Each structure stands twice: as structure tokens, then as C-alpha cells.
Image 1 (cartoon, rainbow, N blue to C red):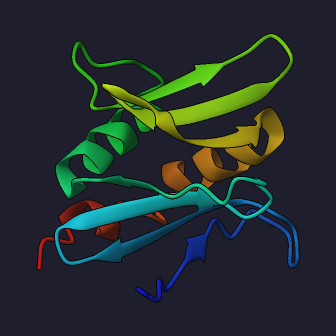
Image 2 (image 1 turned 180 degrees about the horizontal axis):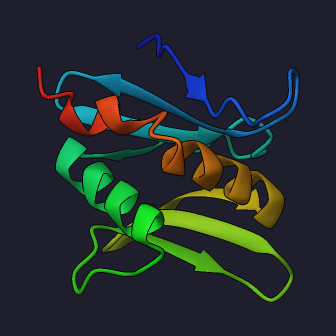
Length: 115
């Protein structure tokens, strides 16, 4: 079993459930600590980098390997394109906390984790 060194945004309060990011050689992993399914989304560092770029610019590039969908009820699902069943689910507040960390460059190093 792989042990991940999870990182969360510094904007997430101590003990709060949040979106977490970890890396292993050639892959970046996302999870949400209160997601009852305990899903872990695994993507290439380049795909994670594209997600970071889109979140920082508040835009959506023409082709995304990672898709973020928000429902009217405030649920946010993050999944890899073509694999919607492997999704991390969170709420709008926790996602916005993660995005604040992204915009503060707290996760940039994961986009370069290749080996």
C-alpha cells in the first residue's frame, strides 16, 4: 500500500476537512478528507499543471484532462476526462479554500513532480 504525504491549503483550518494533494513519481493525487468514498484521483503532473493554470486565470483551457463540475446544490466533482466514475467530491467552500491555496502558489511544485 502506498503512503502519501498529503498537503492541504494553508487556508484550510486545522482539523477541517479539505482537498488534499500528494505526489508519487510521475503522478499527482487529489482527495477530499471528508469524502465518504475515500476516492483518490490520480493524474499526470502536466494535467495537474493545466488545472492549476486554469484555476489561477479563472478560465477553462480548450482541452482539459481534469474536469471540475459544480452543481446547483454546491457539490463540486473533480475527475479525469473520460473517467467520470473516479471522482473526488467536495463542497463549494472546501473547493474555494483549495483554489485560494492554488492562487497563492502552494501546489505549484506538484505540477513538476516527474521522478
